Image (cartoon, rainbow, N blue to C red; front, side):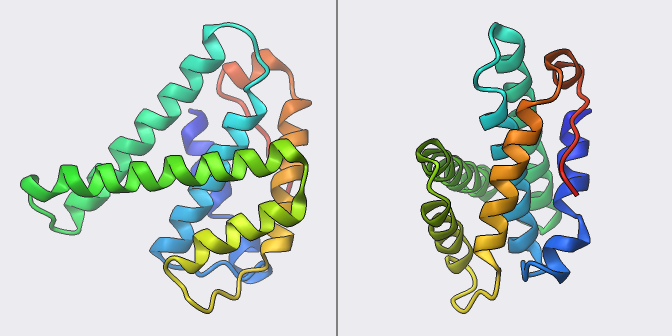
Length: 160
């Protein structure tokens, strides 16, 4: 499924070794959000409910995975839903901020939004947000150039 491909790409060592993304829970979460953003932004222009359905399926899988993770950390049922809501809200805000920066074509603004997200957990983040912004813009263009049917069938290729 396409979600599994997003996860695999978000774990690409290049982000952690060459772009300075912290190799921890927060860094990995941020990379998942970035790859969902790439998919969501790239498929916005596709007509029909298929693309919207694909985005919805990916987001629902993300929610299920976050709920499982929260429970694996021992959060009880009473608090788990609140934690998941917080994660989903944070994710939605990040995607909107990144998407707005992409829409303006302003790499510097996108870099600043990424830095803001990373600094929410790591005050002295060493992530190369300019490189990440460049990667995102390149990946969006790359995914947009891929055949619509391929993407809708769950096949997506990200730049290395």
